[in-house]
Image (cartoon, rainbow, N blue to C red; front, side, top):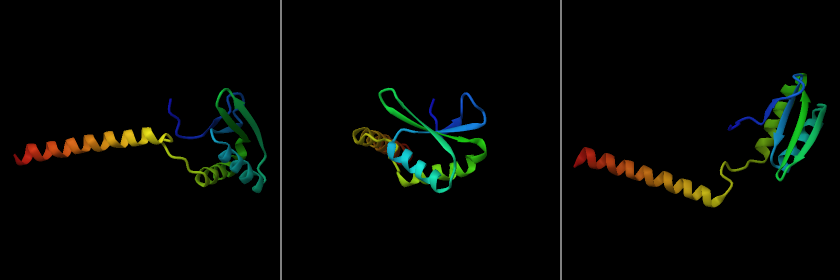
Length: 111
């Protein structure tokens, strides 16, 4: 399933929220932002081939943590398609199909 948000309710404790990150620089920025605002948090790093970084905050501190999360994510923007070859391939397919659609429209309406 595709998740658009990087947080969820803690699976074992409904009073906590879990933020997760795939990149260490974003994870460290989140920690710095939480420390600036004096928000208590716990961390956990899961390494099963690819590192996943978790930050756990209490539900009462979620609004402040959410603001810190937004700041950390915007500070380190990542492309949606990280692989440059895949990105070029997808854009090429898009432009080819768009060109076919435009040519089809012109041919069907003017010839």
